[in-house]
Image 1: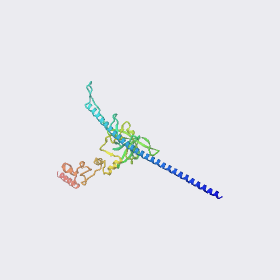
Image 2: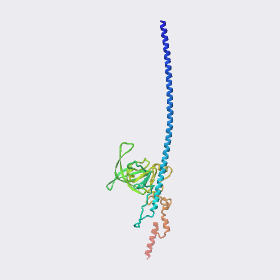
Image 3: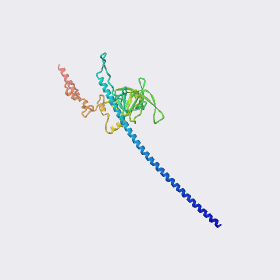
Image 4: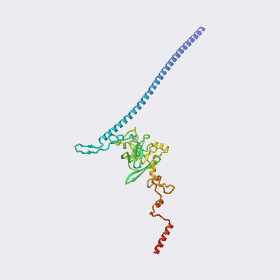
Length: 352
């Protein structure tokens, strides 16, 4: 029995030693696998770092290419403008005095050539991303955004009311921009269903006809009435106005001249706020002229009439000075003096 127990103990000891050896071999194998995995991860990280550096270099190259392309485009546009001006100057010099018909001996008249900086060869106007547009109904010029992506033009309108004129539907509305409130009236054309990008529902808006002038070009165009008070531009020009009339060059701004350079101008919100912050009124000269226009409110000085208005060059002289300088002028007399003169005349008549 003792021998059997001793044999069992020895067997268990051998088994434990074998198991310990197996565990050690397994642990060594696991450690080797972890070391290999760590090396693989490190290799992947190094590869990723290399790829990131390559991507950064490619982005830098792309930015340089974009800058070179933009510079090249500007150079090409400048060269095209120069060529247009040269062609225009050349043709003008050829036809300066008109062409003579050799057979009939007659001189044909030549229509003045267009300015190719402002017009295309086929006669369309160049519009920049913004243009000054005169609206007759407001008697004001607006700095408008030109957007070929918009189907219909739009004008800022609040307090919209419908009324009838000569049996036809009209709309009266106000525009609030540049700290001014402009009232306009325009004839109704139709209703337009507008789908906004932020909403899935359709919004029905009235469309009116407004008379515009851009440079030397005048036209009537359709505008939707919408509240654009909080937008950058109170006036947006869409395809209904641009079609067959103008080509948009987004690299330029305010290409066409102002149709009413001395009138009221409504600037975009940011530009106006910047001028206002600097204490500049873009319509100071216009407001001054309005104050001195006939029929406007008079602003007398302390002399009570010596200087009516804000411009002394347009002031009216005092009536008393006119009476003093012109003795032949009949002047008003006090009531007591007039009564005394009448009594003297009556006494003379009685003596006769």
